[in-house]
Image (cartoon, rainbow, N blue to C red):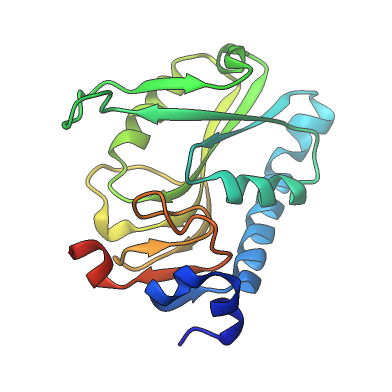
Length: 199
């Protein structure tokens, strides 16, 4: 059942079957992940003077990245990237095309610990290739952080180093996750009604 508060926040809430994570739930999840990252990289960044780079995968991760970096208690750099294995084709080419925003040189920095931040991991196909490409660039380390994991959809093995929560095999939207570029701005995460995407 969707609260009156959620419905007032965004009329798109009428398309939601049920709420999986409220704003409060998401805040707790992000706080947990940020604490794990802070503890893991504390010595690397503050003692060894290595860089910490948060590399958000657009478009889905933008809300997660925005809230996450506020809660990581370490000096860090923020960059965003697009990763695609399709190009202009309808089938995957098998090659991952990476486009980084303002500072693409961060990908080749040997003093950088890079955390790739995703909204959700499902099949893992593109992410698996992306992680392989990034690890070949010679950074200090490359880790994967994801707000959600949908393990039932996995087709390739991939490890998520910092995970918010596992989710059921449902079509979920909100807090950056979309259907047809809609619903990203909802402050909660919910299951989209089947008739919305099956028609």
